[in-house]
Amino acid sequence: MLELPTFSPRPHRVFSAGFYPSADFDFVVRCVLGGVPFGTADVGEVLATIDGVANNDHEHWFQAWHETGSRVRAAAEAAATANRLVSAAQAYLRAATYFAVAVNSVSGLESDELLVPTFRLHRSSWEGFVDTTDRIVERVEIPYEQGTLPGWFFTPSADAQPRPTLVMVNGSDGAISTLWSSGASGALTRGYNVLLFDGPGQQSMLFERGVGFRPDWEAVLTPVADFVLQRPDVDSDRVALYGISQGGYWIARALAFEHRFAAAIADPGVMDVAASWDRNIPSSLMKLFRAGKKDAFDRDMTLGMKFSPQTARTWNFRSRPYLQDSYFDTLTEVHRYTLTDHEAAQITTPLLVTDPEDEKFWPGQSKELADRSGGPTELSHFTAAEGANFHCQPMARLLTDERMFDWLDAALQR
Image (cartoon, rainbow, N blue to C red; front, side, top):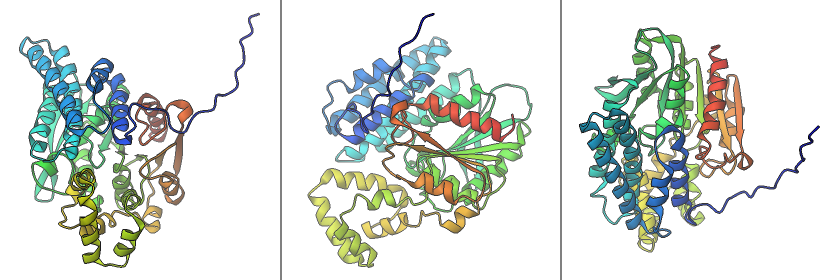
């Protein structure tokens, strides 16, 4: 009888060496590589893109991702012209990913004049994927206030059979294509319909329509639920909700008031969006802010930003969706994005909350949401030992899919 050797568990460092000393550059590479199993990137293309880009070289970083996106998009267009639709769809989807990185990279440039043109390259690449993929997809306009929200409704089969449906909510700066590798592809493979859309402050709603964020996302997800539930190809008893990154706050807030979703997933849990902002502001400035000293806060922030142009550009990019004119007013607005204990207790929807080790933006808040939710809630831990640490488990999206869909299937009794 062959006896296998036994091994003691290896200690795991809290942080791996990573791809870059810069936490921001490193996280982007992890996120892009995490989409490889779902076709949103190719390993060789990613490694070739970052090869030679120095740490915190923002100009070269933007240029490298833009050039890769352009090259892959050209290949997609050539394949589409030749009616090689499989190749075209694959390349369009990857191009959308690379341009999405370039869009966010504009925050590191001296001017944001390239923001909208780069976004349009990203979005038209995504639309190229929609036009050439063999997936069944319908462009939709979701009624919202006096206008609409742009969306895409995917279904795994052409028949009109009512199916379980996953509504996916993006984070603060996520591109629509990132949702493909964050659950959309996995949901379709498992027989779910999927609705993707831009909400207020997200992507086209911000860049092209000038519509900013809002904290009361029940005002967004109630009309989204109305839209989904009236479709004959949707099983109205099995509509689920997913929110990634800051979307973890938006769905939790909505679930406190909108109870028609049968189950929901917060990836991760977020109760206080402002915590990720406050942590990066010097304590002396936070004292001025908490004391309500607007003029002094804005004065000292302006002075500090002069010594760090890169920080100023990052602030401008991050603050854009909040549509405020001053540092004080922006931070005041961000502090409205808080889920109170009372609101969390009003959540009755079965809820899965991911809880990754080394969470950077909202550490501890996943457990806080799970503890305070008023409905049946499960906390799912992800660890460095599994290669699943960091915000939203960027390099363990297959593992994340397995856990959340196994839980969701049980919650919907599939």
